[in-house]
Structure formats: C-alpha cells, structure tokens
Amino acid sequence: MFGMSERVVILFVASVVHGIRKPPELKRSAGTAGRIFKSEVKALKEQDSQGSAAGSDMWSLALGSAGTKDPRAPEGSV
Image (cartoon, rainbow, N blue to C red):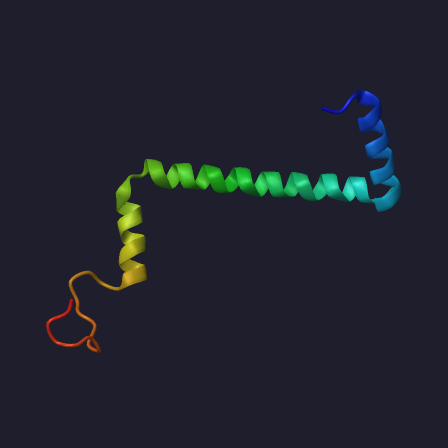
C-alpha cells in the first residue's frame, strides 16, 4: 500500500507534530500496556485451568447464595 519513502515521510511528519519527546513516552506507555495485557491474559488462563469451580464461586458471590430467594420478590417467583 505505502512504499518505504511514504512511510518515512509519514513518520517524519508525525514526529514533528508530536515533538521529539513524544515517541519515547509512547513507546514506554505501549510497553506498560503490553505487560499489563500479558499478565491479565496469563491470569485468565490460570483461572481457566483451575476449572469452573472458581467461576461458579464468582457467580455465587455476584448473585448471592444459591437457593435463597430475594425477600422482595413476589410470591411464586424465584
């Protein structure tokens, strides 16, 4: 799509617009975001490998204890 010369011109214009100090800051924040994303993916894989027990505990905490009825619910509803 773009040749090498077009890419160089685009990068040059972007560096002039954003200033000289921005590229290192952008690289640093992209690296931090990448590390956070990688650690979250690893945590999700570990949680998934532990089985659905952890997931059911999460749902029971979110929905309240299983088998109990909401006292505000009308009669005949669960």
